[in-house]
Image (cartoon, rainbow, N blue to C red):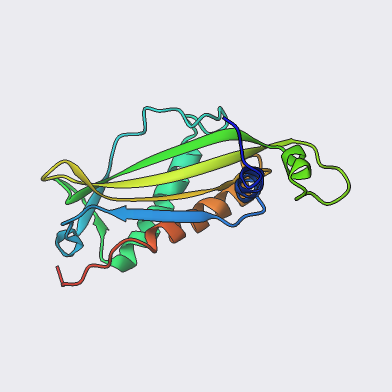
Length: 183
């Protein structure tokens, strides 16, 4: 694939956004026809079978519990409560992924986008936290929210990891549709 002279700056921009200087990127998708007014209770889906990609988080019960506590704390003011027994209205599934990515500042230099000085490639950890809400009646995902950002120097620092989890969950669930009728 041959890149045009505009291709390199675009790649450089994408790499810069992914490289941790960028803020947390958050997005969500509401399935057409999903009616959040009818959802009051939730339960937790089984732990994700897919590895996070980082042995420090895989099967890390503290990480999983922190995410769940953050979700529960954000759902309560939105009118959701955890189902005590029986079937909940929605099941929440948590998925997390950590990948190592590389940013090549050499590409920037070739595209004249790099200031004089060190401009070599560097490796960083990028993380994604995804929350799926599955309607228990239809067994369909009705809402998906996710956050992506750099995890450099975060996973090995428990306090920072907890802050990132709390911030990510709050920003993800800020996009959750509000319940518009009383349950």
